[in-house]
Image (cartoon, rainbow over all chains, first blue to last red; front, side, top):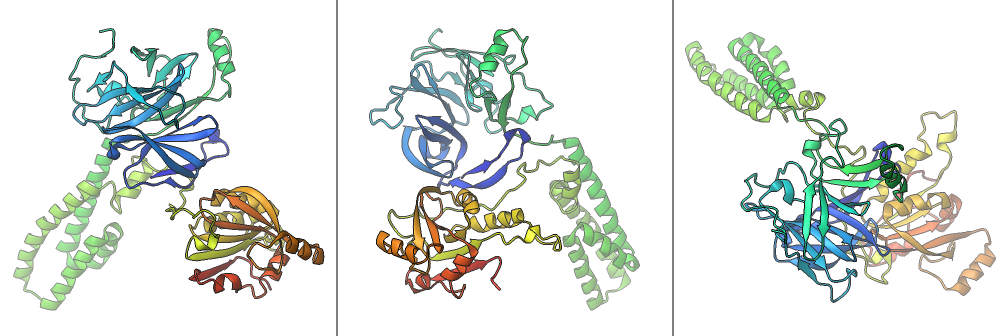
Length: 174
Length: 353
């Protein structure tokens, strides 16, 4: 389940737990909340459903409604969307325990609610495979001064620490 | 941190850029961070860009980052030391108690403070001993059997659970080797009920309707009654009451409306004036005007709420008006008569005299 806490001043590090705002029959984690076109959306980690699910706040932050499945077919973890050059990009971890992979999807439109919304896997992906130091998204990608930065946890506690099984990085340049 | 240098539909290139946002280990245990959410404190980030553009001559930019991870550093050496010390202490006391029966009572008091389970075991042993009165030779044989058995059990128990045992946890907690929750107010977990049906009356959404009111009668302002709770305390208690996931009819004054909305998760769509002493059911505008003309001062505002997480009827009224509305203060006739209402609670913080 996903819960919410609030604070009057985040700099004082004094937060108050409020309530559970989203509960599903499957495991929820990594509540990635973003604001777009006047609405709040959330993409939580829903590994057990083998999909990436999009939720919309009908009453922010207390009530969330499932909107649609963005991508399905694999156990995706820690999906992190960004808006870049006129389309949406999803950085996500394909969580095969023995071989975790960083996958990037991009959309054909900016409208997350459009019927013709299609997500295509990036041709360079899996961008990294097996390397836990590079594969798992660790939070909101930061776009600063036109450059994208993404955080990757230095130590992965949940995935195997097996060495890379493929050369990396796999990009269109090599 | 990775810097994505190129991201197009055909190309993805990035490089490690740990120097861009170096993390100080003093601020948090960065090795345990699995998630980070950074935002510039400046809303537009203009001062940040200007600072970088000036080559660091301007005041360094400030960011705020929400991170996860352990609040306290996990120290395996400390935990191991506690395990060994706990094991030795309990072992010595156990041997002392079993080997010297005349010290049993004192030992039991000590052991009971450390491990209730062990004390219970000794009590059973004493009962058995009084009941059977075994010979000294039999007792010696039993001691030889029990001693190693008890040592092994206690050793396994405390070696494995020392960090969480009755004795080990407070020690370990005081030494900050166990991570603790960072929330100062971890309230109750509310399990949402079924969504409210569109257009239905609130009391149809759930079997129990709670009618509650809160008014400031100035208890905290009376200098002769220093022990009285302040208004803020009442608001805090009231927030807990409001967190119950059930249908609510809430009577408050105007100043408390935001407090209720916040904890019931509602937004106000519009306000409607409802005359007092009328039915709880929404009345027509003509009737409303007639009642208002008859009792110009006796009106309450009924806030039409929208998108409530929990079903709520919010009435803005005064304590006097509330008493007029509910003559017995313990009977909500309209709700009681409703066959769909199985039970009615009236929570009264300050019963009227």
